[in-house]
View 1 (cartoon, rainbow, N blue to C red):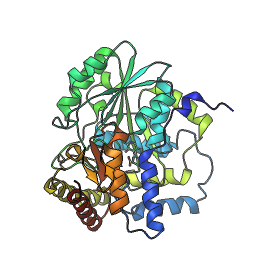
View 2: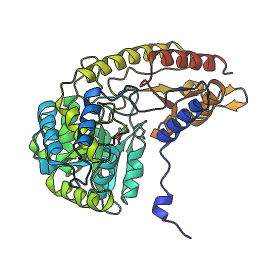
View 3: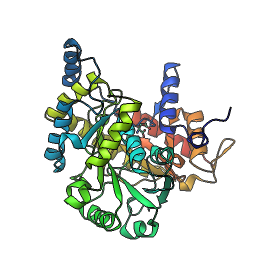
Length: 397
Ligand code: PMP
Ligand code: GLU
């Protein structure tokens, strides 16, 4: 049988695959240190669990409106106004099965065959695949490590052509931790308005910002840019709710309506219990989040300092999310045992094989001279894992 040509071209999510591999090796008794996972290592806060239990006790276990219950969409509107200074009405919000699903729906709703989507590189690995699944063409924009992996006006202008439909912004970024400043967003916003581009603004790491860094939502800049922006967020990272699968989009009514229709025929509503729990998450003061963020901050500082003390490795201090992009360019061409390190995959494979440490090869994010380490794991494991990386580097010849 001939399968779908379009979807045969879609690769597996390497981040999920590596995470699953690390969890499997752990369950088999291997002493694995996992820097692969993009998921908070904290439990979901008690008050959220309690709200889910209450929803179960109240029998709130039936189908809900496909785009999410009104109470949750109202809570999201309040959150966006309070935290992000953007005013939306509940019908401009759609709740989906995680922000990944939200993004998938967006591309299905806005793209026609051949439409191009600008994606700054290094990028979160699912963006290009989701664009392709919607018959679009991902167009990558190179960035520089010295410029904190951010795109400039020039970079974008060079990449725009009449087929350009949208640009993806992910600030704070996975995988590189960059956070765009207001002035930098203003430049991108002005260009998007001038050229009539949608802005897909993935803000799922908004709470994870460090050193006085402020997260700014591009849709908050002015009404014209708001009309073109799809603001994406979700519960996974800020509330340690990766398994609950709740994400959402706020955006122009016509796009949200198309997304709602798609969702009504594909998944129907996201889990009813998780929706009620998400209201509690959004409406409770943020002490728990702040505690998590300060723990991440400590780990971030330790990790960056340690990496920069290891010969042939380096990294910049990320301002947001919970990832570090480690530059391995000076290890390329060296050998570990019989393995020639010729890129991020051989580096990651040799490290796992010899030291039982998992990391994500940068090639998955379009950056083969880097590997990604997540610090969403305990300080003890970070120390042990980095010591093992140091030994690995010392063994290179
Ligand atoms: N965007 C980015 C940049 C991410 O790293 C993730 C990670 N899971 C998501 C979106 C999707 O998150 P979720 O589907 O768990 O809400
Ligand atoms: N987003 C996380 C990561 O990049 C989780 C895995 C995934 O959804 O791809 O590791």
